[in-house]
Image 1: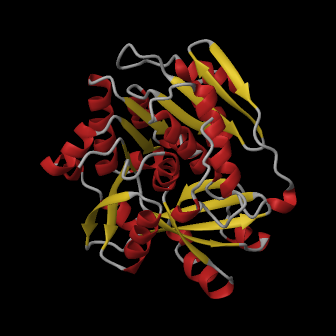
Image 2: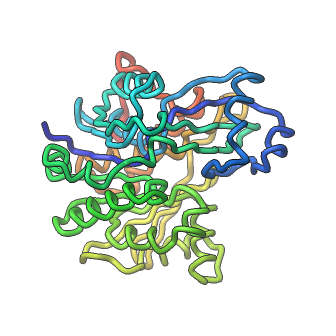
Length: 345
């Protein structure tokens, strides 16, 4: 079986709630951030389940994105690889993916439970605390199994979330697939994912950016990367241009796409940048913003993977899908039987 778009990262089950500011302060969390859990956060998961009304949503940024991409693509166009345990959380994620038309190919480990992510919604902000667990048990050898590498070879487009580089098996997988894409003039997309990646994993991040054709991020991630690189600018358009001009593993130009929440999305190729206004939404219509960035990337990749390599049109598709997601709980998309009259942009 061949799939047009292949994605990899950390499959996580989101545990989402609307906590008090006091809970964020207790665990020293920022209102709008994404971090990896450490020992100080281990009690957080039980506390939110015991004390708040929670929603369980299939997550992991790249899995959210590729579920969204499938919204625009013909049936059975997408596949997702990652590592989970043999437990009910994994079953929940697999069922959610299948409901959105996404095929999953999980490596199974018995050494840790399926990963989870506390999603703490306060106003229009979301604080993500990821407990990778099984997700970081992904082995580099998994993607190299003949049946799995065949999936890589048959795909034409790839999407990786940056969080995958924090563990060795994920980093090895990202290197292998991005190099294959560069060598065969296929499109490899990467998301900067969180500010801490450029702060603490910049060498790894740069090695994958080298083979990246489409680099996504938000304004905070872009500015943090610029600071780490010593660029001495906070102008998002200038940063996007500089990101586009980082060393490239082949001769194809790099497209950089930076979202800015309710502000215009910026794109850049070499020293040329453009901005695209977002679809305005009234506060009363916003349920939460968790997964909005993932949905944007999903809409973008859903159009791009059809061979429509027009950044402006792909941004429109991204804005459309993000607009749908912020009106629902978490990164959820319209059911398959309601996917009619999908815009073509």
